[in-house]
Length: 287
Image (tube, rainbow, N blue to C red; front, side):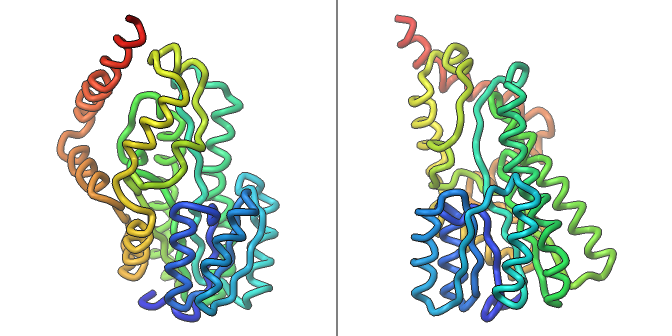
């Protein structure tokens, strides 16, 4: 797909962050949009920002964990726009929790959105993408879909799953000679609201000695590496080049190389860094 002009793109999680910047950038390039999110107010703002570029924009309140709702939305998008060329399965949430004691409710919550949301979006839109004659599936994994981090076991599980599913899908589409392709996106630290909006298991405060709010602020500071606008440009360039994997941001590129170089031996380095980060705060709390 060398041009987005007059194409139709569906984007989940479009109310903010990368979803919003993808929508605006696609609109600038003449791409019509079907946008969804659970946050109707901010979704309307995205639609307004994109709509000034003269493209057709439709919006829908959508919980991507609801399979029936996603399939109904896909059919509605095809009906409203006449076709669908791209699905950006972008919606995602964060959860910080101990891997051995995380509640099953929280685990199901994050998997429902981060992983099953991707499956639902891919399967619901695939018939429409094939019917368009020129389709692309773009699934958002993460840097944490390439490497694991303590307290991020549930998020790692969801994003590793997206990676495996998307890579298998890409190969199957190529073996079929399909007109549809697939790209897996691995953002590093992107300046979005995902950290501040994420959940933190109550056990984490006891484990780290750091309040949940302080943990969110620290995480938000750490991920402020690449702007959402820059991330959108990198993702769209990857789609134009039909890349299998898009590493977004210098941290994603650097740490991907580290993991491939060291294999599982990257893990002691991660643990050492986390201990260094937590030690001063823990001591201050104790004293």
